[in-house]
Image (cartoon, rainbow, N blue to C red):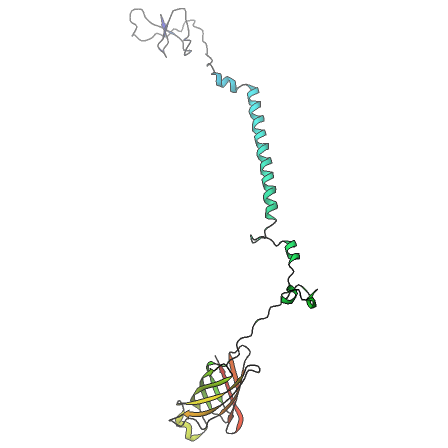
Length: 264
């Protein structure tokens, strides 16, 4: 009796190879089946068993099957490519309707239907028919009023110099009232030398013209316990176009030669 050393199956002595494993069969002694196998090497032909292929492997090795797979894959790629080209074409045409900033581009027909012009041309005034397509924007001027607090200085050719803090009020009709705080900083009068650094208050009133932006006012009373001021003055001032500066002259001893410069 012979036995396969791999699967332990037994066969007749006429068999040389195991049909399941392809291994060379070994002779099993009749006396002891559990004894070690004796390898029969005398004149036993050597045979290499070809593994049996499964039906699936045989099917995949068929050249016709590979051809079908390749053709199917190519067809799928062609369909996907066509869909991508169509999609890109649609999105590209949609992108043409947007500016680079991501906003809808202006519609030329809408622009033609609604030309830009001044208010009169849009209202259909005949006098403005055919005018250029430009927007006329009028910026309202800043309110011309000297009302508020002003800070600056006053100086005269004689060398006198005072700093100024002026508060003005307007009643809406051009009437101005206010007060000026004067502080003496420099003087050439010997009797005023000991007044340097001291302050006094002058109360003023006047009129403001918003067309010419001019302010004319005069002092009518003062609070000057230290006798800093020599006299009450009159003032001719002009308000700047941006309403941030108020400059002009003051009558100094009967002469309009003192300079006053204020800002806010």
